[in-house]
Image (tube, rainbow, N blue to C red; front, top):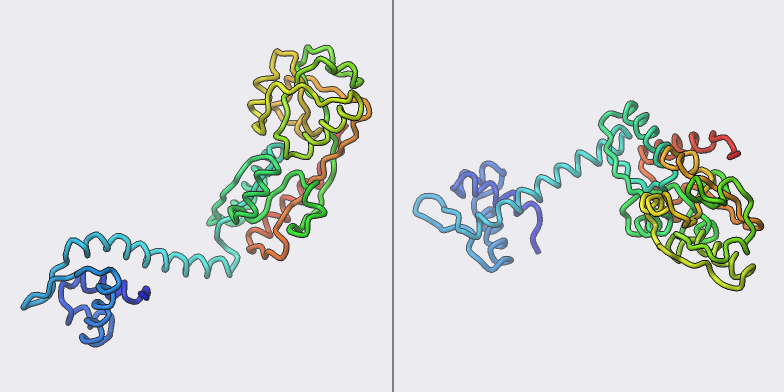
Length: 301
């Protein structure tokens, strides 16, 4: 088994072209350095240096290994620097997931944290709850803010509940349903643009129509991409659903909305983490700032 120390020895020999000079640079004896390089050569099964009467000459294998060795050593130094900075709480990467409706608020929070800690970096994933959940389980993000209906009772997750809002119907501004309370039988011949089957809102809509009309809605388009949903809705007779909070976004200002009579599904919004997972200092700070902003939102009209 090889270790990073051997890569340091390898780079020293490569730069010095002399075992004696390299041994002085890394502060070990020449025989120990020669043994270290020999172990590296045995591991790869190739000769890294050609031994000459005076010094050594790197082989093609050494030149191929060089960028990998330098990258490993560079990453080690970077990790040490980042760990020290992270421990101090002054820098690092905040990796978060954000539901589409919360992007404007998350953007404001990012700007505020950036002013407080100019060295911080951000990695942001925007998606629906199901995909954010997968990103969280895959360790791509530290936490996410979004719909948490499925996670509230799941022991795999810890949810900091923030608020709840309703799902409303959404349509073209000139659709007959705009501004109305719509009975399920009025939707009998309507076609819908809906989220994927795994999304709680889609499951609730299906259950609503099965219980009232004895059948699921007629689905024209299935998509978790809000911008596609808006494009398909614009100027058509298709229908969809969206949280009340989304209707405050500028992107939804040109659409009408309606209420489905008896459809009382509520979206639970929270900050979701893996159970027992420890946030970084910057992640905790960002989470606190985000939660404060979201809790301060006025109740939807």
